[in-house]
Image (cartoon, rainbow, N blue to C red; front, side, top):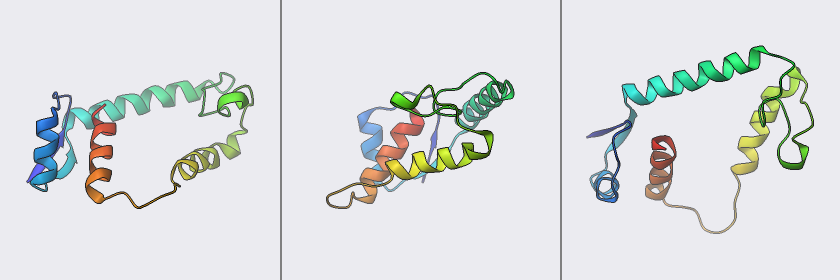
Length: 107
């Protein structure tokens, strides 16, 4: 069975059903359209080279006033993902990871 991620209200009961019944997750058409809309918006913002976009063309936090050279923008995003990809403690179960991804995409 497949759960298509959309703008539909997601209840805790539905999340439980998705996990307990082993639903696969898929991006619904609404979700795909929303992602494409956001990407186009970001691309439009990126066309104005002189205008900073926090965390995309600038550093983060106290480094927000630092402009990142165009050649380093891809590396900045890679570093951001890598800095959030580490942790300590026991491994998180695949069910928890699935819930986290579902809720993040759903939001």
